[in-house]
Length: 372
Image 1 (cartoon, rainbow, N blue to C red):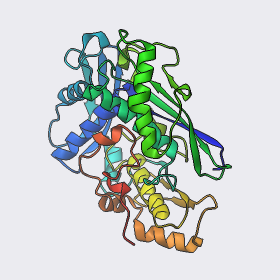
Image 2: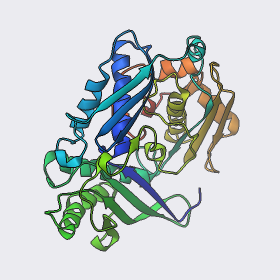
Image 3: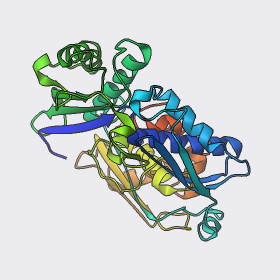
Image 4: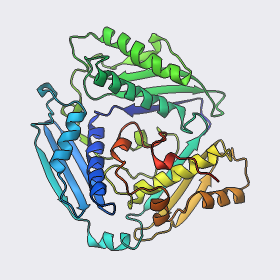
């Protein structure tokens, strides 16, 4: 964790992979709205003028999959024929069946819906207890989307990315400055690259960095590395659910177990245990037991309790290991039923997680500070 600079990226809500994440999580929300104990594992694929949903759903109510998908595509701004991906006319194929009995019998008893290892991370770089690079990157993509949605920059089109380089003081983990910012955003070719660059720097980059207490010059800002981007979305780049796992978590700072989140109900520990680990790590830092913390767990399919647990504070701990261990036990029961109950995860809250990251926003239960 000793570095002189660190780079993270984020993607806009209309990025092809994020279209897929939001469709999959909207299916999950619909299932949980219909029945809190629904089981969902849905993947979405989008490409030029085509959308496919596949996976497993066990729900007592028949869900309107095509209607859900079209609603998300429309909301994300794919409303013009020139995009070659349209909410009203793009064909949508549905290949969804029920969860396999071999899996459901273990989950019915309170066991994990899959095996694997999950990580959670927190640090004191920001008030959200998140790494600064990923928080700035998310803020930039949100600001780009807001400028498009509100008409502040009406020539912007759906899709986009951000990237930020943060310099640190003497490699001690304390942010010092923002070295550069990069945006990739498709826009109407009637607006020149230079005009778009100046507009985005003035109305997006500068205000966002100011909120974090930083600034850069126009020469340290880059827009569209090739110099031109007119059409974004699935016509330019095929999207699939779960391909932005680093964007979804900590921007590369902190380890990742490899499992994606979106489209999975909370019995899938890929999702719920990663949220639990974030909750524990954030509370360790928020209660000033360490400046940074990483929590790791591992589960076996069908079993309720983790088979492994560990905490790494990277030499920043202000408490003895026994105190940290006791603190974790007080904060959260890391069994699958304990996570689902304490964090109240059987509610339809997931579409909003599928853009601008799953962590660092207090609207989600795993971001709360426990009273210990």
